[in-house]
Image (cartoon, rainbow, N blue to C red; front, side, top):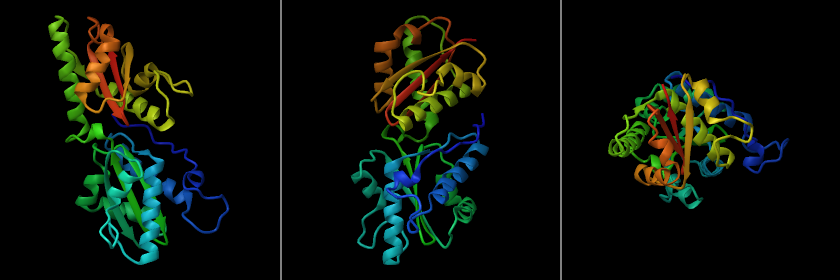
Length: 275
């Protein structure tokens, strides 16, 4: 189900350590627009939006500036130091893919050119990635796409199917009806996990009052829902074990028929739904 258009509300001046009004350095509006453009294309295909991650913005900006200052273009320095390795050293624990471009002051042309290339399109429109960071310097661009460790599987659907299989094994043992994977509930689950990671909270209601029930309704799920959360697991097996320890009654409830699953940065959301 297509996502709603993404509203990016980052203060990139603050994120990149820039003072507003400073004449040099990257244009925060251009970086912001780059994220919006990528997510607009993903939205057309019903893909989850990429979430902006400060450390990836900082590494991307440092690489763009280095390419500009030393006159090269690539996803590694002239000494052979990959940007993905720099992201790991900076504290990003997941997989990182780096895309670079030259010759555009604004991101529109870069995104348009990349979408015309099967190689670049595969990365920009992949379900595997959940995070993004962007840097630019004098027409040079560095985009970093990131996937948390728990999502370094073939794709997000494989992760969801793994959780579904594990839950249904437990429900079968308890002689309960098996669950079906719900795309609307998975959409709502992704929105909630991504929001928890981006705003650094853990709970079924966001600081601004968005609940799992309201997210599910907005995603188009008509039944009643309940959310089950866990923080820290890096695999479906670890997540289901943790969830069964805290939410076994809900996970094995006889009235539950549908499930949505998502995780971002170790924050797992499982939404159970009735008919």
